Image 1: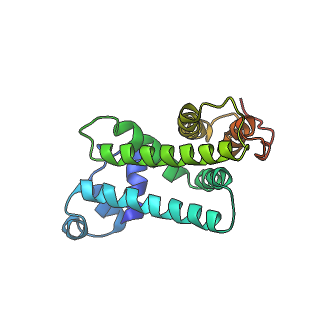
Image 2: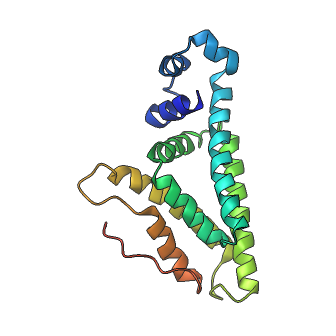
Amino acid sequence: MLEAATGLFGEVGYHSASLREISSRVGISHPGLLHHFPTKELLLQAVLEHRDEVDFALLADDLAQGVAYFDALVNVVERNAARPGIVELYCILSAEATAPDHPAHEYFQRRYDDVLARSRRELTDRAAQGRLRPDVDIPATARAIVALMDGLQVQFLLERNGPRPPVDMAAGLRAYLSLILPDAAPAEAETSD
């Protein structure tokens, strides 16, 4: 059910998706779907929580293995490139959720707050260790990292079936990180514009 909902939300957005279409894709009756998810809002919440569980578990695994936070973030971006439906879902829902009355509005506010706070902490720790350029504005840089990741996702989706080579989101993030983190791995040359 979550996979079908993820797919449909990613294709047409939350507002245009119907529970009937999701139940049809799953092969169960509409009342059967309503038994598990009485409202579309609850299904959306489950889809977003499932996406976060998967991403955060993989991020936690990387960190537990000694991978630095920003390198682990690049790994998340690399994994997402292999799941374009998830990238599409996130882009569409995050744009829709800018409306205060959208059921995912608070979710995305919380998510951005969490990612920004974690990035600020990591940048602050690096600054204290002398592993950050001294002129870096930490709050602005944390926000720029999140904005870059979001922008790369949009470009990735726009170019994935276009005439140009696909956007390498991980290379774009690595390139930016190498400008501010002296010990960041250099970005591989990207072939797209």
